[in-house]
Image (cartoon, rainbow, N blue to C red; front, side):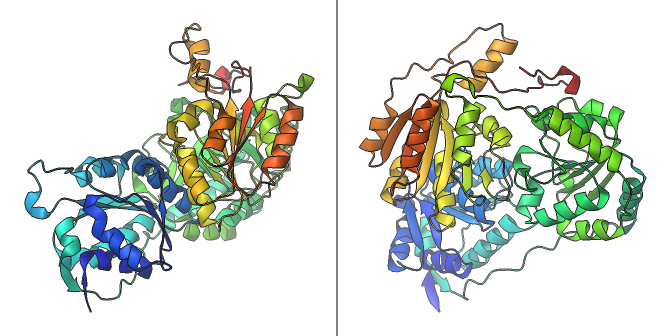
Length: 554
């Protein structure tokens, strides 16, 4: 069957099970949008306010389900507006296919109107990029893009399709998906060596990350922890991989990790790091790792092995294959004394902040929202202090319920991410925690949520400053607050109403209770402006390059 390139593109998306896409039309993708219009009911397009919002929405869609998200943008500024969203997905291993249009191939390289080399621009922040110059390779290229995006360590792929390729015709072969690229088989000798090292450890600690979420193997993490009787600390991206109520769970590790998790990791004689990349915010001073304990590192991406921490024993492979072997092979060892020590740390360092005088505190806000949500409610954050407060105090029990920009730290991710997640989960109630600083980055996408009547509750933790940067200025720059006081007179209630949603304002715990009650019963997007003091800080904090001994408790 002969189809033009635009039709081949949309039919291939359908063949890959794509039901929702995000984007904004423009001159170089009009043919794609024309074919989308002909297929109304087969693929739903969500028009965002900005291409960055489309990329974040496709990313949120992918994170909340594991399915590959799709964003479409025109050439030139449309394509470049995707870049921040593509980089966000790349740093957090989110499967995304970004389809861009471009000028006709005879005009490429001539500084044509809205011409840009998007595959070249995005090369460092994608798993792969394709520029399709021949219509006969289009279908196969799209199938390969989806395969690369989802195989192994997931990530974004760009497919740039010039306008003349969209118009040209070729034979269409059905748009069927290609099989996933097979993972490398784990080295059997190394597997046995890991078993031996785990069996010999007296105080093993499991440091688990987003790899468990991405591979949907949270149950294997639970089984492994129970089998070897090891306390578990999660990276930011790993939150939800182990039920926060599990007795072996100690909390998030890293710069703003919970003290009990960080202390237990410091006392361990073996750190089993799985599906993590030892980023600087997660580790602090990496040189101290080898002084305290032996390190085992297991990851699907060979590039992460020995990149930041040189492990005593490393293994590249898929944890879906590796963990069942370790669970079966490791011997049951009595580590009750070590587990009791970890539980004692958890109890001794437990705090209940933010309850005095009815004043709104970030902890009180997070916990009040948690009281109204279900365990499967998707929680999205922007980036900054509120992100850490949610990570510390919300209490995640299921994977794929915490969505946040961890690697790139993208302020403005949240609104688009919440839109994508809400749509992916069948338009179920979704909560976005943001701040006045982050929300101003992409608050236009609240209008997108209104247009599609998405039940998103936006909780703005409003401290009138760029809170995390201000905290660093206070701690490390002698209190010189250079350009971190916002002084913006934004009326969030009026803003939400002007965009077609509902708005509320809370300045006390009593206000918050009433606002949340109304927000969670509303049938439209809702924004709650939660006003807190500018000097609330995120504690604990380990200074950059510091160790557990340098932790500032507050």
